[in-house]
Image (cartoon, rainbow, N blue to C red; front, side, top):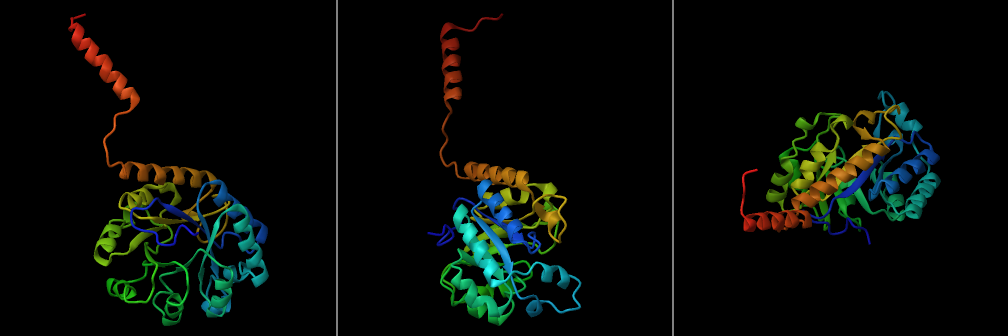
Length: 282
């Protein structure tokens, strides 16, 4: 069963690796990135599915890049199968309505709705019909638009706090909003991390400390890789460090009982024996 199903605030962090277009339209490279996800202990690989003409005008300066990164239905099936083979859950943001039905047939772990899509009726109508967890980014939404999401008929909803600047520094991440959104709206609130990779897991760790159960972060084959998201993405070594940081933060945040370690107890016993013998000035 997908770990995202029924996830709640304060659950152990579920890490989603946003591959985006870092595969550059290459199925082998996409599968290598999925392998990175598996080997670093992250739970899911996330992609962007689209027909480029449906969501970008020909004159858009990034249209050529996205056109080069577009996969066919057969290629998506291969990638989905590879995720299953290595034990990584498959997630995508779907930007083209003509792909909605196909995406459901791939049996993904969840639907991720970009904040740009959350403002449009057709995508949100579909989000209410799917039988899977739905994650919605809040980056481009104002408070009224976020509030309206709670009136939608979505049984398994997680809001994903984010700042839609690629990249930004950790001090601009506004992660304090995670607690606010959770308390006001009563739903799980995760974090989509677009901070510069040089800031490591600082913002994500603060999100986990506030109970964020889902963390999403871009990944790339290496920091020398070309692409629009490299500056806010992690390489393999960065993924390992990030995983360790959020896991350690979760451990610290959920220690609800004070327990002395065996080393501390040994020191205590040694101190008590010293007192029993009496203290002498050396």
